[in-house]
Image (tube, rainbow, N blue to C red):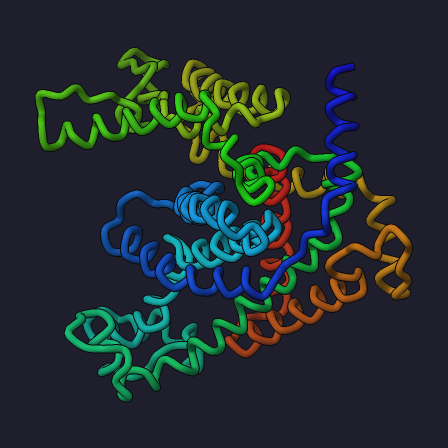
Length: 425
């Protein structure tokens, strides 16, 4: 009864709230913040190889930016309430920073940019790079001027010298277009699955819980005065500060929380020795995020964590662990990803069939009027983006059958990962 009353009150408040929308000033603030944040991410992850703020789905660097903006917005709300940022504007800024920082992150453009010039810079007659890879490196999508690459790989130069900058322009343009085509396909898919996942299946989206709570009403003092919030901050920050000071003051205690330093099991007795060291990480942020997990998913995570180890020990005990690849964990994982792609589409097959017919006909029903992208536009984004990807890869020398198999599998896994993010965070 209490929950129903609370839900009705919340819906009533939402009904009387003024409509919020994306504004130019939010886009402007987000664009300004992208520059220092991308520079910071590349420096921290790519050069220092520390912190890794983008290696978890809820990037703490983005949350920190929103936190600072919220504190400033509280001052604006006090002295000039009409000028204060709204929650929709905060979410716009959050989205812009999250996407840009992930693109600049480790394993993304930090590895993508060096690959544009590695072939030309590192090939020599003695290492046979030309013989091994020469047929697979299209000249139009890589930097071919050794002088420009020397400054990039060795330093002591500037990108903005004419001789360094010009050779990079064409490869960067083509790969930017390729990334935009990938993004177009994925945004189109999001437009198709949004209503099914959020309104019909009502997935929990635990990643957005913190940003939504922080930015409610454009930020409020109530959020920052919550006792449990500061208890959580004290625990997490206390552990980090203590361990940081331990490096300078060894007499201070070191609190072990890392996955590679804390184990719950390790044995040298056969067959248990096949497990190696079983880690037991106690990262405060992971413990906090786990509270947002639905119970069935929480059960699935720890059950299969144990089930994997039961398989390893059982195979070792029966003498079959030595077979190459056994128990084929990578193959099982890929099978699971494809199942996570297929099962949700089977569950929503009637919805997706109806939506696809609307996209083909261009019909807009009353409950579609608030969709940010029409289904026909989404279909054009998917088909146009995929056509560009196919053309790009054909130009690069790939066979059509390989392109289709690879990218169908790629997008299937991407959609499955998105589904997991929506359910598990």
